[in-house]
Length: 415
Image (cartoon, rainbow, N blue to C red; front, side, top):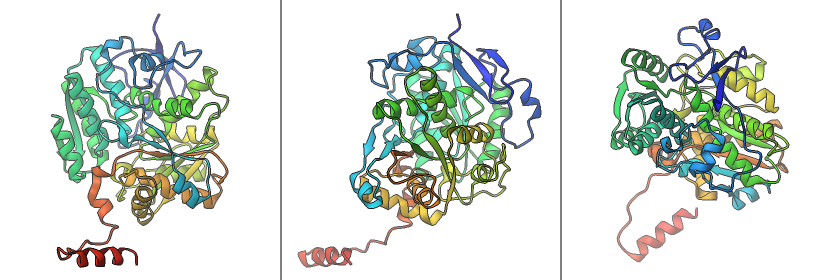
């Protein structure tokens, strides 16, 4: 018997597993050029574990228990996930939030939460006998695919905006990916990747379009729930671009609820930059789909999309959880990088630090309360975009090589 089937998040149509199927046949006919993906499919496992497996979250046994993997040997050897749920005592004291936690996904192999989706997509590509996996990305998904594909011996082809941070470009090249810098936006790279996969027969990992990207990202929810037992968090703040990370977390908590392993799901709060806020605008207005933002721009490149590809599913999950949406300015994101690092020791890129900036706004708007158990999703490592972190810091001036010079520097730092 098949371990899972697909279900369309829009019309509910079900389909058996098929390596060539990415979207619902019925709803994909409503697709508009450059629009959010219509007919996104989610994975429905036939059987879920009746109890928590006694394995580490990165072990094959744990992954195969909760994920649609038919052959454990197809799982790439690079350990992904199993990142800590950190207490943050100094940040807790500052915010007067005694039950605040950080989900530190900066510790994944390529430095971002995107490794979770790539692990499952590459595992399925191995099962299907594919030798090339391609993706469009603002940077992190490309690096994640490059890293996991390298460990599995598959070729990765990644299409990224030419303006992606240099550190991310160097990272994906170092892993051996074929890097295609597109003279255009992420949205243009997304459409070009789909066309290339159709033309050349590559397996398409692009976010939301491939059903396994959402499914892979649900592993963060499994880990948060396991570390929080016996109580689930009240709310999770999620940096949001295309909406797949939030949808993946929602899917994980829904699966756990369906299995009887948790009693309730947390509220999910999407955090978006002001310059790329289609999902937040739709969530606040009550719309069931997003309107694109031509010319979307933000210091948080990982969250910058003109049209969020999983807007329909993300908005549905926000509402089902009782959550909401928050926007934050680039200045607030920039300040949050040093604030997060200085109070917790976690150095995040702008997209990851957006969760902390969003917490301030969510507290002000009453989306979360200070006495609740709240988790911030820290999605990417600060070393991926050092220039963004440095932009908000004072310029360092050299001092004379003497004790007096050191003393003056230390004294100045205290002012």
